[in-house]
Length: 108
View 1 (cartoon, rainbow, N blue to C red):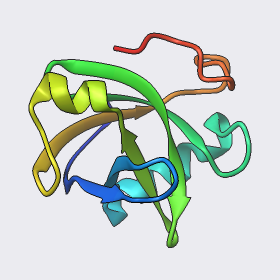
View 2: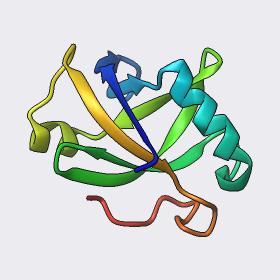
View 3: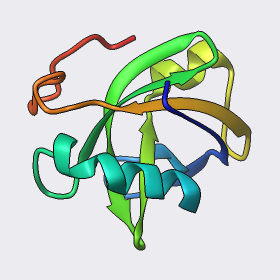
View 4: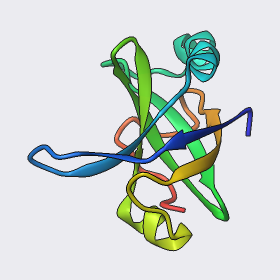
């Protein structure tokens, strides 16, 4: 993993509630530097992420000039983390071709 950071888990209560981590500014600098080689459009940046012993692929989404990381329920449950918990994250931006734009790839 190329980037490590801590962030608090928060919930967005939209039509499809989901849990998120906000990438800190120094992490956003790393993402911006890698984005041209990785992004497949719409500002989404494919990443490989680790929380505890759980690894999965997902995409960062732009928000308020930075990026947010979605955290699946399966990951939260496997690692025993919940709303408001501060989580340690390891993350690598995945180059195009390393992950399909349609999101196929290993869940963990």
